[in-house]
Length: 281
Image 1 (cartoon, helix red, strand yellow):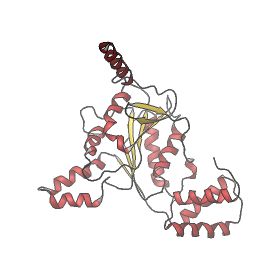
Image 2 (cartoon, one colour; image 1 turned 135 degrees about the horizontal axis):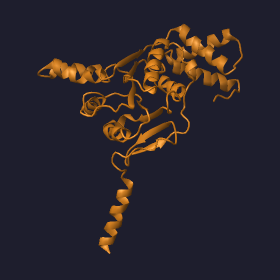
Image 3 (tube, one colour; image 1 turned 90 degrees about the vertical axis):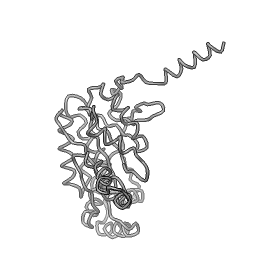
Image 4 (cartoon, one colour; image 1 turned 30 degrees about the vertical axis):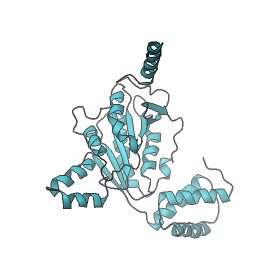
């Protein structure tokens, strides 16, 4: 009896483990979230995103990332991209908006797969699965950074560039971060002061960001850019009211939060729409 019980448990465990290198089913949706324990791709039926035309104040980086993404979607070489800089300036929004705009480019729909920061060590397993499919995929990691004794950045370096297998041709990696080198400045400076060969130790840590062919910086917006965002949202959602009054309210809103950004502009619009009993999508 014990032998049969152990056999049934073993069979059940085998069913939970996906076949190694099996091609994932990417036909059910255009976006997925990578989950582990067990490894699986969870479909996302509707991606929360802002229309690309509503992203203001980031025109230059928008155009660069758009060209890179279209190249990739059309089957041509393209670079991994690191979107770094000020909070709330549309880094992750830009990636999702571009996917929504470009996903039907090329011979097949472009897939977006989000991998959580804490699951980065499982990235090689995900890439092994994606090698077995022909569908072109943007891997997206939001708020990527490393602290303290976290050594998972080493595996990410090997996956992006430099490993024997390298990144599959049908996969590109986009990440957002508040840090240009993905690590806090004090961590890099500590390495410089305590290492036997400071330059080499620092080079190893900052070389992670070198694996991204595109470094796109996002900086705090001016007052004019902030107000342009507000008025563009108003036009898009047909919120009709005094522009002078809204200008004063929007500036006061930003002062209470100590910042001007796309996120602050959107939060103001949500409040404004609620007060005017207008539903947003």
